[in-house]
Length: 368
Ligand code: OSB
Ligand code: MG
Image (cartoon, rainbow, N blue to C red):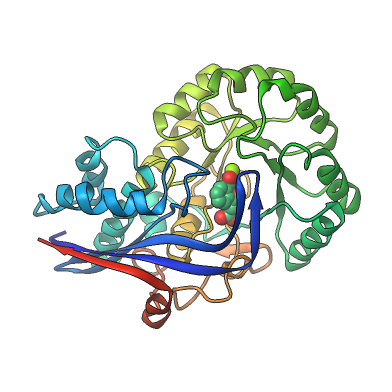
């Protein structure tokens, strides 16, 4: 595509309820929306950074800065740009994977829209809808958690993930198991434990969880391998898997037997597909994680989750799980526990320009 420039917007989307993890509580989703301006039309992407560097080292204002100072100039240096070239052009700039992923998606969307080709088909989707799991934040107490989970089960979500942290783990998991029996259930610690907690984490084994997600810190691959050998519950990595190389290393070390794939965390949907491919070849199940995406990233996640190696339900929930109002005209809805893979060209969703303006708190445009 012939790139003219990019528009960036910091958006603030209010959440329908506060979302609490081991690293904090969010009431507003802050993200950066990327619009690729090309001779063949616009393309849209999303940078899934948060306001503070608590989940990873990335955060919105860092992405905002690196994007304008380094990433956009590198991309505008190229006159004709294929989506497959974006990651390579940005590779000399270290890290900032969520920022890079936003640009790759915007360029990919512009290219696919101009070809009339859906993202799902391009990535290799083999189904037209994906089973929908839901990530449930830490609540006031186990009884409150049970009621929140009940609401999601009634809505049709096919898998429940609860956030845990030290002191808010065994009683919470037990309460959900006792209340709902043999539902597909997993827990996410967001790096809140250390190897000293192996005794406590082994107590989770009695709950027959699908997996425990990221119990230890991002760079604790060896410790995760040690822990995995001590647990019956499968260890799944999220934060640690920053690239296909990291995924390969984690599998080689025995640090994980399941991988959560998030395109933002690994630098884009093309790297996400590479991780899918290597896991599939190794017989390792993967599932699609989420970062409270707006309708843009949510549409792309549904397309990614439709690849054949995504054998576990992902955190691809309906837009309404997080937002009363989205910035696309047809937000993802839950139908019989599933989310449809969009079939239109590119992302297959249209931006609601009024909503986008209403949510925008900062805007910048850089043209060649
Ligand atoms: O660890 O998977 C995580 C949200 C923000 C940051 C990290 C995580 C999450 C979630 C929510 O669990 C997943 C979703 O978008 O539904
Ligand atoms: Mg996680």
